[in-house]
Image (cartoon, rainbow, N blue to C red; front, side, top):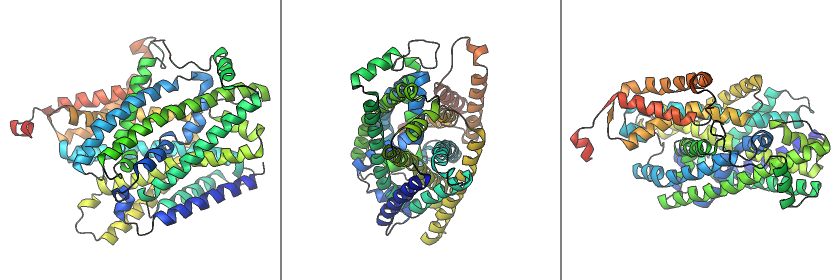
Length: 487
């Protein structure tokens, strides 16, 4: 299909987003931006969070990885299910009881101001790197599919997309994102279903016949029983549980949408519904991956990994399916990028700059400051997208999970120590411990063959990171006084 037509589709889709943003951001203020005035509908939040949780990386990388890891990614999602229950019944009651705007305020009340700043800083680091990695993947595909044909440079494509995101999040923040994420999740899932149906029809296979062919080619294995493998089922499920707890329950971007719901009960319903929707959606993505690997030899496609899905759709499927794919792709892109920029702005303003505590600033001055921070993060996103283009990693989902293992581990350790012990930590030592733990994990990862022989350390590196942080905090802490224990 002509790049000009595909580009027109992108512009039309974005115009719809702007219309939604204009309607939802009227009379918006800082509370609207940060927590949606605590008036978000829990069903909309649950459905919209599917798009945020999956992102363009899941849309592209999970199907592409089926040729290497079969359906074993589903083990991680089963772990997510366990993690979401911990979030619903342990973390959310804590956040609602404290009535927080930033979830890292808990670290301030429990461990101290430097612990609070450390937690917020690690969130900012992790979400910035993770979100820009996701953004890069989708920008690259749009560049290859559309903008190269129009002779538009990559950096211009990245800039335009970031400006688009800025335009519809600049005023409304969370209040707008709850609605735009719902629209975008709908488009993404519709695109997924249509691609599955079309591929089944093109292969002239029923659902059961396609599964049988996948099984013959070793594409549909869910559980790995090799203890030494990175895909061993117990390792993956445990890692998936802690990934969900850290990357959702201890992540300001994900939690600011949950705490924008009026009551704790509705917020809990949101998380539980999300957890079961995710099971079905990821299974469908894996099934799509199996179909793509069955279809590729038929049409002579040799692309693998992240390049497989775009190569088949844009090179061998009809124009209408290409349009649906592009809409679904950008629908997968925006929920992860718009929420990230908004959450990073919120965390930096509230946690690092202390905006909520600044009685010397008028509401208008706070509003201007928040907008400057928002623009600064947008510029940082552009810079990091260009860095990822230079690095050009072949599988972005592996890279993103690796980044999470290093950067969310200290958050996991900080929250666990605060909730599981009553000890008083030496707050001044916390930043050093939070930095030391990931560095030790880097050494473990680099020297794992010498340390463990045939055993491969995979995503459980996040658990190790959290445990090292916890141990370090224990070493620099003392038993609580009797008064504190009573409290």
